[in-house]
Image 1 (tube, one colour):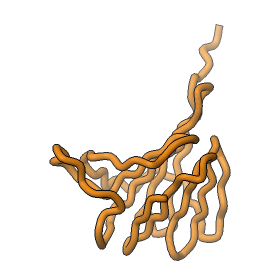
Image 2 (cartoon, helix red, strand yellow):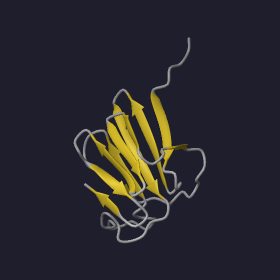
Image 3 (cartoon, helix red, strand yellow):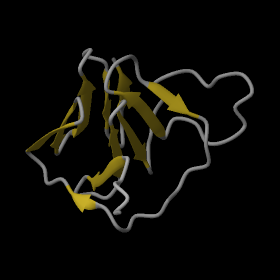
Image 4 (spheres, one colour):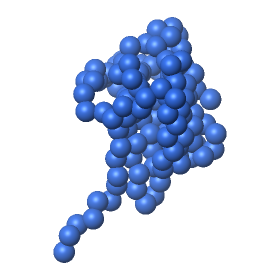
Length: 124
């Protein structure tokens, strides 16, 4: 008997290859993790106490609920992602993402989300 996959995973990146995202979907819901490799300016959220790794690069959210940022080593690998050309709007697993020259904006079913660009990162 074949074994069915319990989750589907999609990856995409902006044309600059500076923002890379992974979407995971399964029966229980979905999640989106986006990494901005090179960033400037203040971080979107304050560094938590006890975070001694890279901060301000990795953004995570479920299809419902607020965005969180991860205290994790930055992965600078820029290979193996599908390209989300500027002007493309993608809808998947409870998320909507819009890739534009000004940056990448994604939000979930509750309206929580983030905007990422090299110069600015914002959580809403």
